[in-house]
Image (cartoon, rainbow, N blue to C red; front, side, top):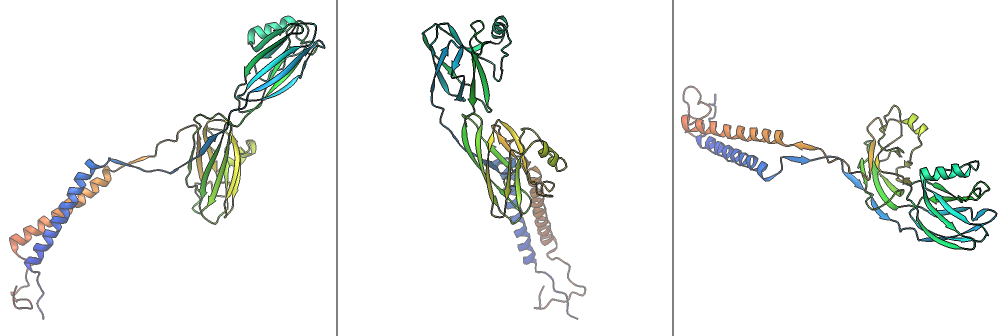
Length: 352
């Protein structure tokens, strides 16, 4: 029977030295890295940013308004753009004094049954944006800064000379919302039933609402999806109630994403956090949803502490160094490992 071959002392020495060197290097790197690097690394969903361009401001407008003894305003219906400066050129073509009095409150229509005293009481309580009196044959000019609005508004104008309003001297100023800017967004859909990214940001600094948003959706897979945007900010829907919710509140955008992609546009009326989902059966329940931050900064990505990682690396480094120390001790103390076979028979080669 051939004797079992024993390890050479020099081989053990080389192994222990290699372990000591490797463990020492790893230990050094582990101890130095926390000093050179932050103690945490940022991780989180990527954020998609909108490219926004403001639209030009509405051009100044001049409107000629004639006052007649009918009594009446000509015209008695005027439309202007939100955010514009309108100059009313007032011309009294009658023989009686008239006023051009623009109510301060929007979407209020006064009843012609009001008495002159009741009309004056309303104006004292609520104020007026314009109150210009024009003598017979006279003229006047007054400029009005039309308020910005995300929806259509109307303001009534009247003559407050006794009984002229009651006889029909009133009109309506309609304010048409103007687009504050145009924004382009992009997002992706995947077969993993997720939006990538699932966080989108629309910065509205320096731009008024409404904003016309165009989104392009690229399908990175082969499954069909939808990109359905909740119309109300701050509302979170669930896989069990989204059908009923969209039945009561139609989606602000509902874009079909075929395997070749999809696109669409919608008007964003105000700031806030808007949720979007995929309405294909089972997709929302599998986690296919995201959030559009409009005029609101998304929360910072979550930070994962590296303390545990460093602890494990440190433990491994100390373990390697420990094994190297033990082997060095064995080599220096016994000269061999494992023990030679009983009987002292030399290994092949004739020496230990």
